[in-house]
Image (cartoon, rainbow, N blue to C red; front, side, top):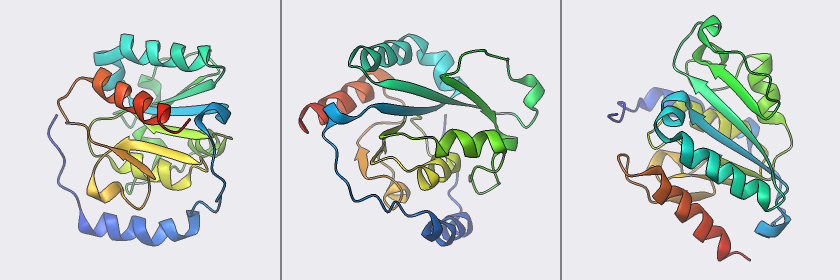
Length: 181
């Protein structure tokens, strides 16, 4: 997937709106104290790397962490999203976000405002919804692949090639947090 052209206007608008959502939580957590993790990824990432994502979720769960997944479907029609009865899986579509990437639907706002200590963006490509969710999320740690535009919104940016295997990125997340213990 190629990187979309980044709009300076959208970035400026996000920056202005972001002032209202600054994380006022100065508290630092040891990774062992993290109780709730929110993962964000799009459905294409899930289809391509389902096994790695589920193994990562299982690893976090085995460490005593509660994991919630937010999955974005690249469609505007919510009827095309499969229904799930899993409470730890929230399916959203593009209609749930403004054109600047900010959550706007009740379900999207509820999903991102839920209590979470760690927010991890698993998408390997630049996306305005990643910024919008990170901006509104109140997690102490916000982790994402490195993009210069993400600097104001994420506090942990890890180098990850767009076409690289997701497993490498997941290993770099795990290694990073091992060093925080």
